[in-house]
Length: 102
Image 1: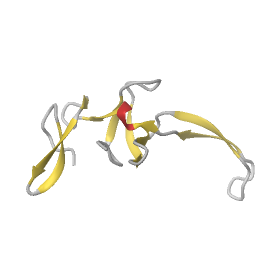
Image 2 (image 1 turned 120 degrees about the vertical axis):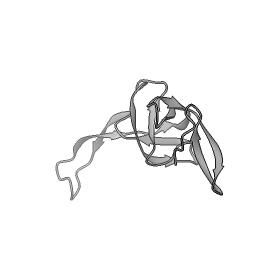
Image 3 (image 1 turned 135 degrees about the horizontal axis):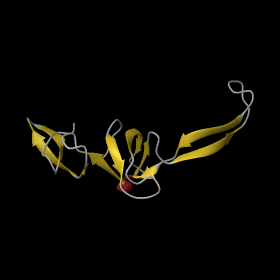
Image 4 (image 1 turned 90 degrees about the vertical axis):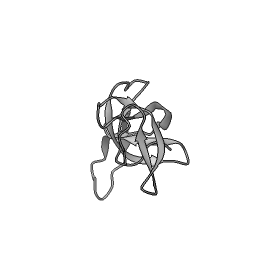
């Protein structure tokens, strides 16, 4: 996948189009990512020992990875990435600015 945990991404389409956030969880098998503060839903929670009252809570749902793009570290806009070998290591490089993302 082109995104990893901790990357800053921008949502390209859907109800949260244009919003940015940090990737909390990457699910490569499903090609999905969970982004902080994006795609929020209300879940009903049963009472438990930690939460005796139960109630409702807001959670982030996963988005498909194709709906997000990495934010360019130089310009702050969405960019594609490419893989390059620098000092014998494979790194991710922003196509727009040529800067290292890793």
